[in-house]
Length: 449
Image (spheres, one colour):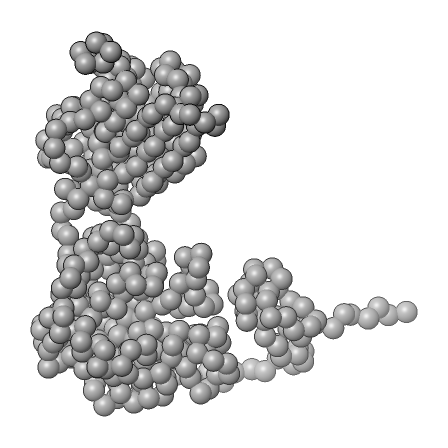
């Protein structure tokens, strides 16, 4: 008796490929909402395609005969943004800029549009979230007015394409892809199928016309880019705009870049007049004044940049059975590990003390190279002994108390020397123990008590 083959599942997730026999609003594998769609039934008939001869301009050529002069980069007018893009905007590139609401995405792109217009390029800024009057008010405040900067407020994809045909821009900005809809796809604006259709159409226009397109993307509550994951695969560059609303500092990071490195970071500052570049942010993360106990400077890497960051610690007696461990800008798990190493290897006790650790300027330290600076700051606060301003600490702290070297140590030391740090503690258990012994020397005021 012949066995019957099971019928293929009629519904499939467009994100991860999960299949099911019944429609579901949420994928059972990747938990993505709205990604389960009905698939066509397999007929078993293979249809052949007739070959089409390519035109002379599209004929395949040896890679050695191709020249990069055919796709020259052009500056956006914002050097910090060009740094993230790898040197400038490539013709026909599709660039996706994402970030939290209110972080400054529209302000940054309006500044890019204004500077490109001043350089002689015609720019079309399509805002699907604001009216042209609202964009004009922000442009007046930031000084982004120019005759070559065209504004349009459209939410229909066909109308956006019509605006492109009429204006013939050299740069297109769409703010944002989740608020533009196409009549060729079902669902409301922001639905995964709508986002996929709008993004694919804009990217096709960019490639056919060598028109660079900057697309704004929303993020979900967990910080990932909203919409189907396919959106990030379609575009050429994915940039993330991040920053704390409580501070004016902003960072632009390249998460994906087909035309350059992905370890560059652009630094900006939000002001009352818009957004401004910070080409040398070395002084933003250091406190001013005389040396006090509980502070230590490290040199962290933001992309390819070496930035000095001051770590501050406060250790006080606790009146509760469970002492508090409060951190800001550093990982709580790493601070807990460092406290354990200090208590075991340097004979400092924290069982009856509250420990507070924070960074200056709102910067986040996620790399292990800041371990030594955190340890010295905590030891300095515990012993009430100030570390001189000329000392910087760089290194990863192991559970044995050993200080391990970190990546690009030479670059960090060079940056520390440029800023006047004559003593850099960066390797060897002897350096760590000697540094801890120096900060454990009691001050005359503490010895009198």
